[in-house]
Image 1 (cartoon, helix red, strand yellow):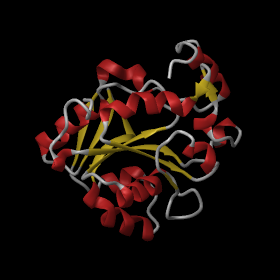
Image 2 (cartoon, one colour):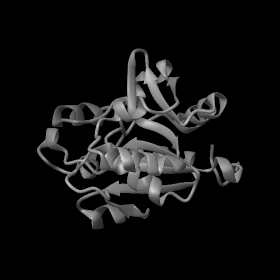
Image 3 (tube, helix red, strand yellow):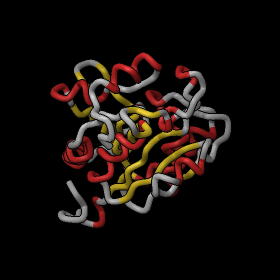
Length: 208
């Protein structure tokens, strides 16, 4: 859905969050989203796919902030120090989001589905759930989720108590899993230099 042509009702508007707050340890400690893929930073491919699906786009990053700001979207770091993981990025996003629903996608997934948000939102509303998460066959993809902004306090309490594991927090909520078996390849993420080289073969130069 493109919000410029088909605006959502105010209570169903969505803030998109690109999660780029990790340390990229499996790629030698580099900021993964800024690594070049097919002539563009890897994050540019993910942003290009996510932007048309949301009403606002923000970026969670904890280093190289000037480089992330160059993408033209608001950038913010975790409120909890020490690279506490994707839940810390989600919490910071929930606090800052302008819209009542928040969808997340990682910066190392340049092939993310063009209908990710539509399918997650449809399932969330149909189930009256607090959070919808993508799944392919038996594999959940917890960093591809759509949740309600009003979970900010609940997640903040979980993190303040030392919680870091996504599965444990999700287990405390009303969650609906959304099957994307038909788009399994879209959830491919890039963690190593070898995976980066393989992905480059599937994206034309300047694709973002």
